[in-house]
Length: 387
Image (spheres, rainbow, N blue to C red):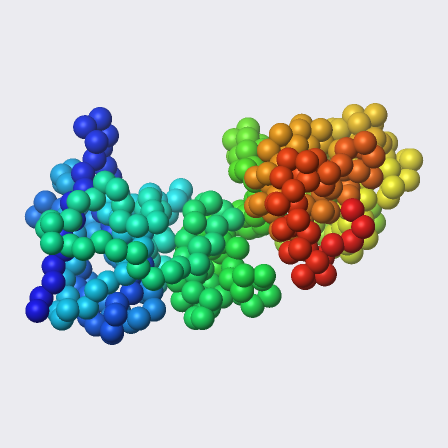
């Protein structure tokens, strides 16, 4: 007995698709079997064969075709086995900035289907119609989903086979998986995929990752600074401070620079053009202290002159109220997206400066269930201290 399913998808009348067509899904079978996939667009087609097991398997690939017509996918397998399918979708691959079609195609199937950034859904994508009405759709096997901290997609993990689905294994994490999906880890975060990246690019990637975890949004400041001057922020600050650590005054190379936020990230201040050039030792000593708690009066005057932050603002010990307002106005999302450590750390830092602002109590009033869950998760890993 041979089984065959054919799906088609095409762009809306007012849109045009790019030349890179892709499909992706997570599929499990009743018994191990061989699944053949034929992806076509116009006169161009590609065939792939996947060995399925009773556990969900990542399947998918892409093809390059200049034609703008619909994309079709044919799945076929022998025997009477049923398939459990999650997130089947076909369409144009959404390629991250700086990545070429060749990069995607050369990656092969090592990070599919996550790498195509398709609109995976809980079941078959609603825009796809099977070729036959004899298909019987029923509830299938269960999948655990995890949210990628970079792209925000909900993608599957297998808790029995760590690292086998959309996220790489990371035993130190609470979920035992990386925070970012395979694709974001490779194309958007992992420095090793492009060994020619500059020091500025490596630093920007690190800063973006750190700040996204706090602010839950992309850092626009780095790009704005880069557009104005053409140089990365790290290079600019290094030159502004005469290629020396501001605190101990020793000369340091660009690779040795530790770019300090000046006003601490712990108090919700993002990196900006007022950053300070420090060596690793001085940066580790400063940690998340305010400038007024670390530098002398004469140093504060000098720092204000070099970094451009007015002295009156530099000596203040304050929370970034713009960012705090964003958090307070969307506290449910932050409470359910942040790790418990992050939520309670931010709450403590805010209350330290503004005793009247209690983020924990605000969350508890809005959603006692989410607050209790956050407390339980924090206690389970010994993260919670006095709020």
